[in-house]
Length: 69
Image 1 (cartoon, rainbow, N blue to C red):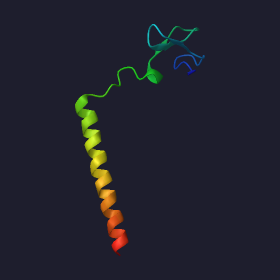
Image 2 (image 1 turned 135 degrees about the vertical axis):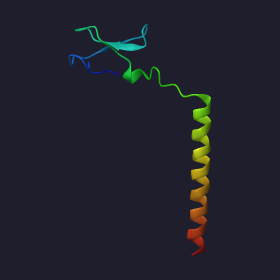
Image 3 (image 1 turned 90 degrees about the vertical axis):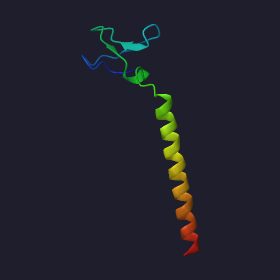
Image 4 (image 1 turned 120 degrees about the vertical axis):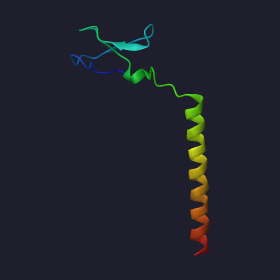
């Protein structure tokens, strides 16, 4: 992925060592596209799973009601 530097606008280069993009002009580092620091906890993932199960159940119930009418 090629990103623009938020500091000076130059194209940034991905650095495998830093897990970041580095600007060759101003040497700024950016972690936005790498997802660094955005890991979800186990509890958050389980909560999202539960919400999807509830949504799926509600959609099935609405579909069944629509067929009955």
